[in-house]
Image 1 (cartoon, rainbow, N blue to C red):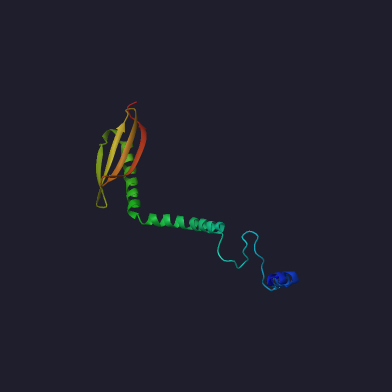
Image 2 (cartoon, one colour):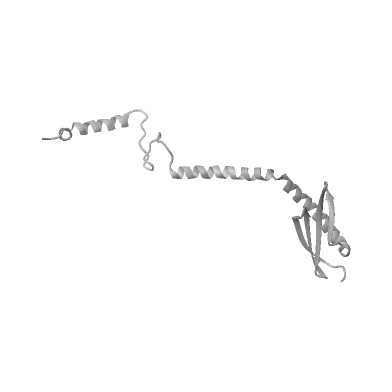
Length: 153
């Protein structure tokens, strides 16, 4: 006894139906064949791994600078302290260069109601190396090193 599927196959009706279905799909308006890369047509669902990684990369290129700039804005006190430290170091460096023999090892200064300490160290005699450090509340904020010739030549 021959099965129904076998009869269809022998008579060719099943193959004929398959060919008609394929032809109907291919020649209907708007049919787009599947892509050879991912096997999906234009209306396919989901994304490939490569597409997802490219999208993630673009997202990170845009978002990381924005977050880092925003993070910097959250710490205005640190920026203010660095600015004050730079000003103090510049002033004290000018005093050290102009009067190297009259420099104390530590100076206390009041800036905007806060106490700042400027520590001054000197090493060497003819060719002196100076190191100035600014501290606020015991925490080191800034430091500068420079060299100078002594006046006794």
